[in-house]
Length: 86
Image (cartoon, rainbow, N blue to C red; front, side, top):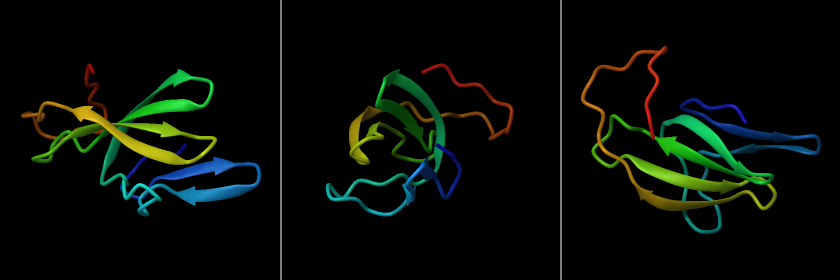
């Protein structure tokens, strides 16, 4: 998975743009960080500097994206090396 303003999920058979609306209408705006939660799922922290920062679950097998919760807005300026505890 490549994160950035435009984010992609790469598999040996295809490249999927995660910033395009999926069947549930969910999509990432500015994904910042990701963590693996099991073999086929990751959680993605999306735009912690926005007015509505969120955490999403991405199933890499089905490519489904589901919003699972809010996140607190980050008050410090953006930095490429910033680590956010979440």
